[in-house]
Length: 397
Image 1 (cartoon, rainbow, N blue to C red):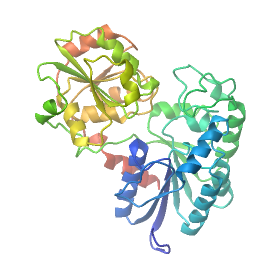
Image 2 (image 1 turned 135 degrees about the vertical axis):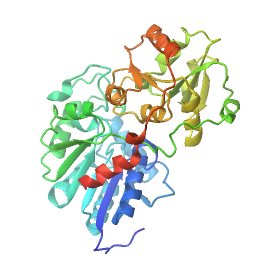
Image 3 (image 1 turned 90 degrees about the vertical axis):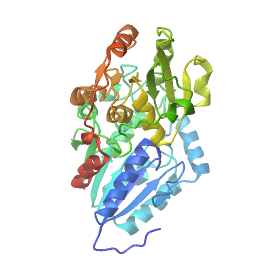
Image 4 (image 1 turned 180 degrees about the horizontal axis):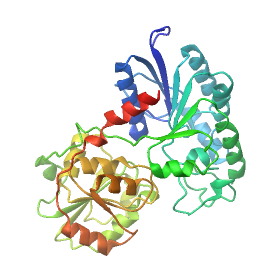
């Protein structure tokens, strides 16, 4: 644990549900770079494994997280973790940070009232809130585009997707929307960051529109994600060298990521010419997937992932709800084009970098035609760098 009293250094606190995974990695990358720039950095997280390469402090116990999850199921998401959040606030008062950077503040680990009462009444420094999804301005859900729901414009009720994360048994969305609006508005020192223009436009229609909103695109490590050819990757994952590889990658293949579309595409393919490879599969995903599709469970081996991108003909990302997906960026950086839907910030990526295609949802014939004609062009990936993303954040700090 860090000592207090480094008066010559600015103090940066970041808070996120995890310190691994996509959002956790962003938090940790920022912390590492801020350390180099004479910031005294602190990272707090709610659940999951600790990042051993960084000093992260866990806010919650696993038992308390499960109790908070139970409360959420009953319609009280963000109401648990009372004692853990009290302890966190005491830590923040001792640290006296110049900047508090909030990432995902949902995920059954923090009491919203306690945290935001502190931010409104006691804290005088700068607050940054990065929206990695839409949860902060809805009565329940993280995304709503699949259901074409616009209730969040002026108040939620009769939610059409209570079974989506964060799952609830009872509809309390009207009350939760009102509570979020009360807690999350009226902060004089808050700047909102969105990774995409798409999300910024949504925020401007929400009760968060009073705040300054900046766009900072997600970045990737271009020292890792670059054209990486290693012939052993074929044998390691039993991939044929003689077929065109259609790759799918997701951290979690939940419904909104389009796994069903991947399976449906398989019906249209000439399997003597094409090989489908899906990365990020869990055991429960495997039940209805045809045997001819190569399945790779979630891997933290980024070298292997770069190799898989590199040998693939195309990355197919059939996502129905997304913000600014890094898998698209990783694929492009490895000189592999992307085919995706007009979802969230995907179209921004394709139009900006001109290294892929937007197609209509479930247009498998067009998808196959594109793959047949696709070329392996060289791509300059410097604009994707994690470093640029971090520099933009530190400028805002």
